[in-house]
Length: 251
Image 1 (cartoon, rainbow, N blue to C red):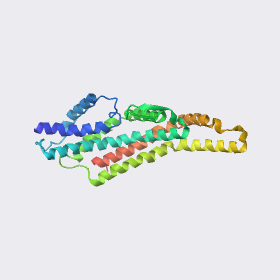
Image 2: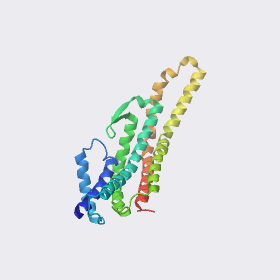
Image 3: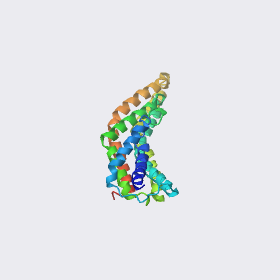
Image 4: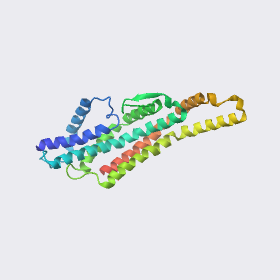
């Protein structure tokens, strides 16, 4: 029973992180693959983990502890998922402003239809996440959480739950920051359309303005694409700092 406790409870926490973590939570990844990865990761972490003081797994208290482990893992994965959702939201804002929102594509991660621009930003952000070894940082965080929140002894306080909920606000703030340059550029284009229409009404600019706005949107996206890496680095550093504070591995 002790061996089963030492393995099952950490496995639940790691599985919770993989359920909501960037990249590995996609519906395109088969559940057996994700389960095997959680299994191997648990076996790798077990030697550095403190022993679990809960031999009785068939009690009501053990069920509560199991749910606690799932919540801790899901919370850490949720923080990383919000980083990528920032760029999905930014892409959707840009698509709505440029008229490119009519081009929709199926999001294979969430199983819903989203603007193609948002999916494009999601793919780029995911590739950046893997290229900077974000998955290794998440494994480090989940390993440190076993020291900060020993199984059956401690877990999130109400203040930490509140801070996790407030973390979602950064997604909207950062999304507006990413989309600010394209929004301002398109506002200038629309103002130019208004001035041209007022100066020469016979031109009927707004009849072709929609197509011009889409072309300008594509050009602006291409010009501002270089800043995507900088925005991602800032948002990911903010997420890492927050996760470090949760698991008490950094000041």
